[in-house]
Image (tube, rainbow, N blue to C red; front, side):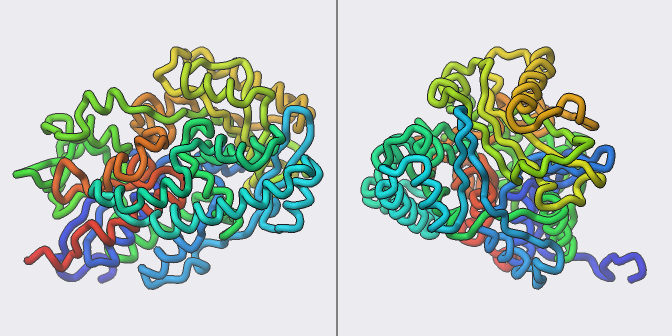
Length: 505
């Protein structure tokens, strides 16, 4: 038909997806490939959730994820939709993956090149070269078991946990990432370089299970990539796949509650009062918000209000996006600036929840790879600082600007000379943003903290334990945060969600 609508009513079973983050969009594509008519409901004015895009003054900024690992998980989605990912998105490898700059000014470049990595370790701590090699062997096995074998497997029954218990013991999952790394290398800087990865998924390296050390090998196995035009191009591409499958992505559609009848999810009600019936419901909202708010009137057996109150929540983030009138060609695409304190600073962020005067930073300069994201002669930046969630007492309404200025002064004194006079555009994201825009309890940027007692079977299941035909995807569900994790949470739906053909019409 001329307007692109279907000539006959769409009789396919209906799946409603709450939220259009990567987990929600990946779930929508997979459900569309399994015979569902899918409606994705996004409360904001653009898709992507935490992966939305900011545009200002000719600059394009990715709001959230910046590092693309395990790109085959994205390729799978395009294949399921009968398309080629390369027709919509261009991924390019980033080399080095990132540079780590320690507080003493020494640096460490991480890459996939074994010889280059050995040279980096040798320059930093020659006595640790053998230990580094043994750590990589261990990380390879962690990745094989923890990601390749179990990453996209549901943990719906406690027997699933018992089945893998021998592997968890063998891989010393009861240790923290830092404790594991410390068994192999002695140099403090190298320990930091090999143990910080849990911060990518909201975890404390001194408390996150050693399983998360698999990230160090996952990067080497599949590389670190960037989507030309910004990670938002992946969001646009996935939303396009949903529409091409006959689904819909509705923006400014705020869900008030999940509707339940006789123990089954039967749809949602929007904040406007509009009901939307569905055969199944998938929530890409924060898992604690899903249970505590979207199912607020439902008696819950496991994820009760008391349990959600006792749960441990991840850190939050302070993010400053800024564009400069000049370029900084000496700054790589990804730069991690380690502060002098490591464990003590992480204790401030995760345990005491005190906003410290010092910080460690992740500086993202995407224009190192893609100059189109800024006007000619300019650079686009994003600097991120892990900070306590809102269970701490920081008043971000008054703290945000002084904190931004401290970061600006630090960057100007270290890697971005003349920064204060070079800034053209500026915007900040605080824990209040995660609470108010993304409805994350306590402004936690990654949902529940990824400790062993909140992982696998202990994490909210992908097939809800509380309501039939309700499914959870995204950072707050199994297997957890990070792009590979949320894409795997959607892949698990292939095993736990019914095929559309099971709904008789």
